[in-house]
Length: 61
Image (cartoon, rainbow, N blue to C red):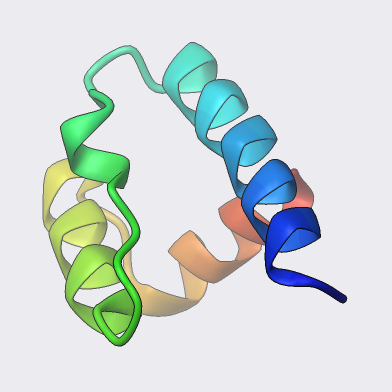
């Protein structure tokens, strides 16, 4: 899968996450190369979810 395809997929997931969880903002979902775990950590705290719960939520989109 190309970087463009990954970015397109992430943009769609971001939009759906923001729609489902109104507390989230674009800034909460900024994905930078090499910072995936840090972003997930922030999301877990923001949503009050465990790592496994967050993985399931993201995988559902």
